Image 1: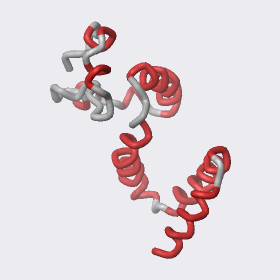
Image 2: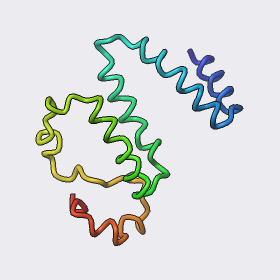
Image 3: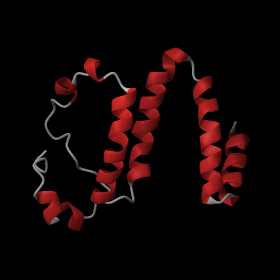
Image 4: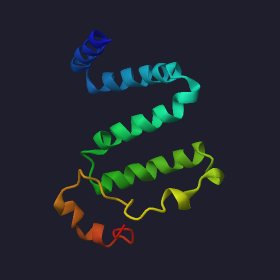
Length: 120
């Protein structure tokens, strides 16, 4: 498996950004289908937990908000909202917006401090 990862990384370095997107979009469904059904939820949680910071790392607060506004309708459509326990999910204080990737200027910006959720 080590040589396949090395080969994949070598090929990826030579691809254009558009080709990388096309590759990822064609490979992801195949990878996902190979994960046993009873392990898919844990697989998805691990993929998101380990990669979300990297994916969002260079986005500022405004870009993150725009992305979330675009993703929320997809989430509402795909997830059974009636079955979600939002109070239990967000019951722990301090789980608000606090990415490590933001600079001190962005953290202290007026738009950040005017938010009703900035104290979370």
